[in-house]
Length: 279
Image 1: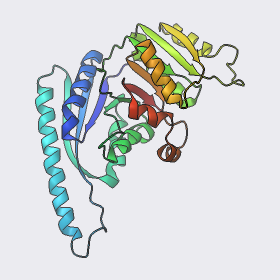
Image 2: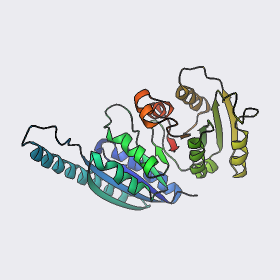
Image 3: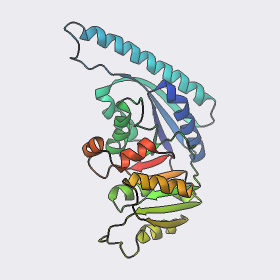
Image 4: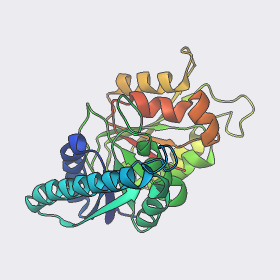
């Protein structure tokens, strides 16, 4: 399956240009249509103000959100007008509580959603909600951008974080167009389980499946010498000079990930290459 309908969601004026330029480049390389949703977010928490102030505060935050949505949309149109791709832009105002449903409805009709890092310094709480809503409720893969590496529809070296989970298998299937375009794909297995059904030859079945699609694939089995699996994956990405990571999202419950961390969150916080995820 090719990526022919791509969605990106802009909420922060200071990072719009970087996200949008990356999405435009990817859409151009894929021959895809790019849909851009420009959100002004009303973060009013109704009930947290003294009596009589709620209506006034709500009006002010709505006006601010409308102005922000218009600013984001105007900037997006300027950038897109200089591109040669097919595109569409819509500006909207949403309250924090309604973002999940809105994103899920839009993501459902996309082949891929491109987003900035949802975790990190100065990020609003809405950022992870947008990424999660696209993956869990929109049932669409998400490509998370990284600061250090450019995004391309034809990556040269790709690492697959493989643990035989349904989430990892879903990510691999969705990432096939990128894997087939790559010059080298490495299946990275960290400390494979002794009782895994694939224990005699870890990664062999996935390797054979990908090879039938014409993917140039290899397997790396790595002992866990660092405390976190995400640290091991990050080191392997650096060692192989990879420019894309493919991984399943949220192997544990999202509540556990949010409280305790986990491979998904750690990778997204510290990723130095784009991360392709699906659940």
